[in-house]
Image (cartoon, rainbow, N blue to C red; front, side, top):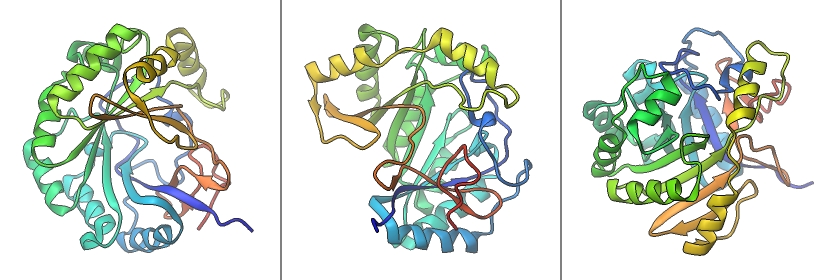
Length: 288
């Protein structure tokens, strides 16, 4: 029997609350197994599951702190404790925080860096602050993405920009080239371009509204791939993504959801009920 492999371990922090209103967000249309309020999983349980993940992980053992809402709305000490238990004094996982970044300041970043945070993954649709603000919050929230990237990379964090492909953002070759020049000048090291995808269960509340917006604003990544093939170097692909180097940056082009392939799971998720799942949208896919 083929051995199951898992590439990343995800831990959900905080609650379902978010400070943005991204029109393409499907997090509320997938499952959160456990209480909707902030109920952190016992750190001993997370350490136990992280140890089991290390035995079946494929490649570098990444431990991702994420959430159904914005994880940095949780108490900073909760985030710090999660980083510490994943890092395990350098003998555990490689901690990564996925966030929109608008609440981050130098003190939080420095504290989490000291506790073992390695990677800061920042979600956006553009390098232009006004575009991020308008699309992701209807103009309510201000962005200073460039300053944040410079600050984080200056502290020694690896900065990945996760760009959702949508109309009005990085939606043609000129916008791609502008974004890449900007990302390099600010000190980012990695860029992921992600294609939007509609919720799979349109019967769930809010799913149809999200699906309709995505249908009207989805951008296919073919122009990106053409530009990357022309100006970069294609690397060995991942089962769920194409990988390139481009002007000194690592670039990945991927889809919105990554189902298991060849007995390899893209994610194993520690849900708030304390159990480990192999899928974001199927509560029946429980592993431990």
